[in-house]
Amino acid sequence: MSTAQSGPAKPGRVYAARLVGLPIFDPQGDQVGKVRDLVVAIRSETNQPRVLGLVAEVFGRRRIFVPMTRVTHIDSGQVYTTGLLNMRRFEQRPTETLVIGQMLDRTVTIEAGERREHGEGGITGTVYDVAMEQVRTRDWVLSRVAVQEPGKGLRRKSLRGRGQTHVVEWRDVVGLVGREPTQGATHLIAALNEMRAADAASVIHDLPPERRSAVVAALDDERLADVLEELPDEDQVEILEHLDIERAADVLEEMTADDAADLIADLAPETAAKLLELMEPDEAEDVRRLMSYAEETAGAMMTPEPVILGPDATIADALAQIRQVELPVSLAAMVYVCRQPLETPTGKLLGVAHFQRLLREPPSTLVAAALDQSMDPLHPEATIDEVAAHLATYNLVAAPVVDDDGHLLGAVTVDDLLDHMLPENWRDQPISTEARRG
Image (cartoon, rainbow, N blue to C red; front, side, top):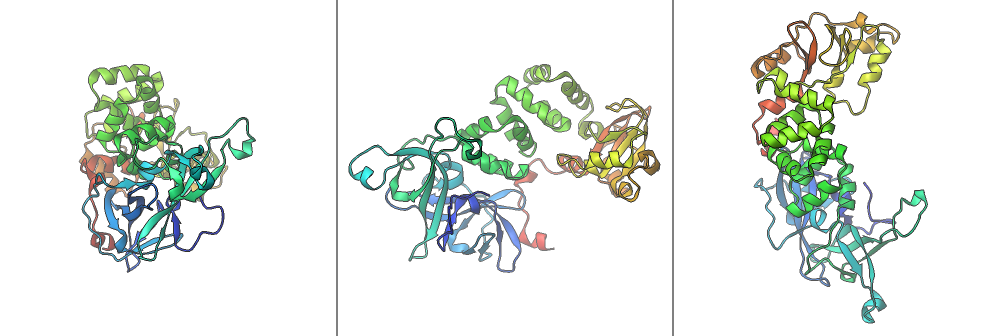
C-alpha cells in the first residue's frame, strides 16, 4: 500500500494508510483481527491530537475498539496487543474523529513558517495520509499531515496528473479543526480499491452517511457491484435507493444474477419493475428467471453463468476458462459440458468435469473424455436442506441444476448455500478467540 513517506521513516512514526489492513495479534501469536481505522481526539489546530485507539475488525466483521494502552508493538507488518480486548461493538463518540473515515481527502491549507507570520495565503490541497508517533509520555499523537496539491495543466502520463505533495507538521495545516469539512473521496477510494471486496464493504458499512454517499458516488459501477454483494441487505437497499435510477440499473448489471435478484426482491415492486426495464435484456432475463423460483430453493439461489463448454472443447480450453482471475473459486471447481446452445438454459447436460481431473489429462484431449457422469444433478425446486445434503454427501463445492428435460439452468455453489443458510445478521456476529483456536 502506498504511504506518505518519501524516505526512511523516523523510528516510531507510523502512517495511517500503511497501518490500515494490518493483522492484529495477541501475545500467543494468534490473529485476533485487522486494523480498520484510528480514533483520535482533536483539540486544536496547534495541539497534536492524541490517538485514543484503533478500530479493529474481528472475525465476523464486527468492529471493536482497541485502546492504545492495549497496543504493545507496531511494526511494518503487524500490530501486537496485550490480548485483553473488549468485544463490545465500537460506537464513535461525538468528541472522536476517525482518521481514515473522516480526515482523508479533506481540503486543507498549509500555512507554515513565514506565510503564517505574514498572513499570506497558504497552499491548498487534500489530505492523503496522516502519521502518528509516540511522545515521551508514551502517548501516540498525530504528528504529520501529507497533503497533495491539485494537478495543474497537461502533465506527463507517468506523473498521473498528480500535483505536488507536502508532508508537514500538524500545526501547519488549517482545515482539520473547527469547521464543516470539505471532503472528497479520491484517496479513500484508492485505499478501498486495494482491498478485497468484503473488506472494502466493511469499511463502507461503518462510514458516516455523508462520507458513505461521497464514496459510493466515486466508485465505478463494477467495484460498487462487488462491494454491494458483500454488504448486509439493508445497506444494499439503502445505497441502491439513493442512486440515480439509471446508474442503479448499471450497477445491478455488474452484479451476479443471483445477488441482483435477491437485492431487487427487497425493493418496492414499482422500483424493481423500473430497474428491470432499464437493465440490458439478457441480464434482466436471468434475474427474472431466478426470481420466478420459490425462495430458499436451488433455482432461486443458483448462479446462471457457470463455466459451460461444448463436447468438442479441449482440456486446454477448459483450463483457460477456469483460469480467469474474476471467476469465483467455487465456480472454477468444475466445468459443465452441454449440447448447444451453451447459454442457460442450455441443451442437454452431458456431464461435469472436475478441475483436478482436467489437470491430469493431456491438454489436447477432448473435455468430453474427462466427464464425471455419475453425479446426479439438482432440480430447481430442491429445498435448501436438500441442496446442503447433496453437497455434503458428495463432498462438492458446486452442483448443476437442470430442468425436467436435462437442460442446464445454472449451478449452486457452496457460497450461494452459505449466504442463504446463515442468519441474516451473520456479518455482524463475532467469533470468539477460543472458537477460532479450536
